[in-house]
Amino acid sequence: MASVGRAEKPVGLRRAAQRPLVLALVALASIAAILLVRGARHRSGAQEVLAVPVERRDIAVTIEATGAVEPIDLVEVKSKASGQIVRMPVQVGSTVRRGDLLAQIDPRDVQNQYSQSLAALDAARAKAEISGTQKKRSDDLFATQVITAEEHESAILDYANAQAALVKAAADLDLAKQRREDATVRAPIGGTILDQAVSSGQVISSATSSASGGTTLLHMADLAKIRLRALVGETDIGSVRPGQTATVTVDAFPQRTFTGRVEKIEPQAVVQQSVTMFPVLISVSNESRLLLPGMNGEVSMLVDQRENVPAIPVDAVRGAREMPVVAAALGLDAARVRAQVDEQLRPRAAGRATRSGASDSSPGRGFRAAAQGTRAGGAGRASRAQVAFVKTAAGLEPRVVRLGLSDFDYAEVLDGVEAGEQVVLLGVAEAQASRAETQNRIRQRLGSGVPGVPGTGGGSARGGGPGGGRGGPGGGP
Image 1 (cartoon, rainbow, N blue to C red):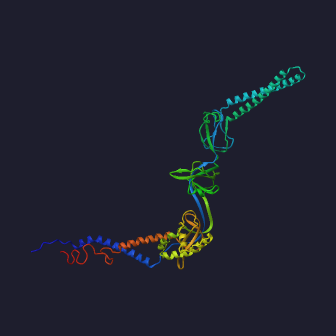
Image 2: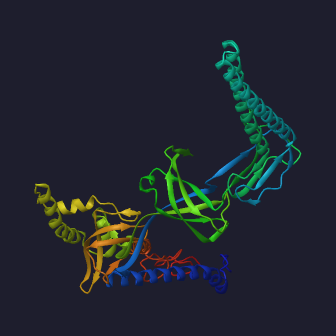
Image 3: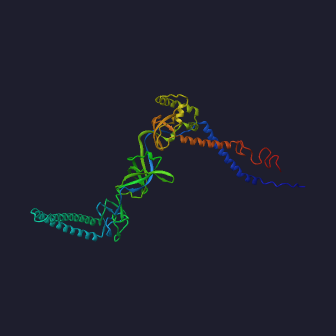
């Protein structure tokens, strides 16, 4: 009698179901093997570093800011005369010379006043001449006692009044002449018309007689003399001085630079979005007339520069506080590095103590002094000592270097290393060490082995182990 049992799956179907699992395990085993090989290379070989030579180069420290172009001499043109504009030969964008006609006010009223003043002057001149003759006759008659003293005094008074009337008539004529000339508005400077507020046929009011200040005809400026008004942060304003050279670029001509000079620093600060800044005016030559008022631009002001000096990348130096981290990244002994740095710094510390009249030879003083320095990398001067690692035939040697002028890329070397020596880029070494540490953590996680892969230290696959697999020895039927 046949027994009833579980139907066993065909061998082919069972192998097909296990194939994806096997492929995944093989892939994990390959990754683990690669990491193990790299780790072995890392442990067996020295730490690879990237070194660059100390080279001579130019170093410039600049302050960057943004601003807008504005004319230096912006003139608001008004008319001293009131009336209707009968002629206006200019328009926005017109270029005029000093004295060119800008607008003609209706001259009829002022011309009539001038004619009346001219006639009044002629009458006053004639009256003065007659009164002079009468006074002379009166003097003669009074001398012969033909007329009385009262009559003589009356003749003298008439003469004086005639002279005063003559002076007044002459002054009135000059005023009428000036008013007639004021009806013709001419360009006060040579330049370009920036905007025009009136046109022919419009009636305007005088700037001298109107309580509102008169009607503005137009604005004009000499665009050959322009400036850039830039806002500089309060942290940088202390390095800006009038007369410094500046280069200006504008969005309209990004490939072209314009040379200028710092004209002045305005004393009143401007606060924008909780940031305190100071307006700096940079005068720029604009003979080509390419720069126009309102253009946005960037200005770079030269603070200091050095030419053909030994320089190293700022990434090649660190403060002494960072030596433990740097030594670990380079595979060096931190205590040995500290001792070498302290040995180099001790003579400097002793020299400073001698100059100050005191001495402190306690161990580690030089190292602490270097630790007070800041990491190079900002623009300006780095006056404190820094530490660089020089690549020599014997290995990596820590050197205390004194830096001078520094920009964001390179720093001037005053002493400590010579041109041609190789210095290590510490940022690259730190990145390599960080990557190696990450790989090491991955290896540690995979160190227990990949499950189901022999030789990796892991357990067997699902249901594996001695006597544990389905269909194996001891398994179910």
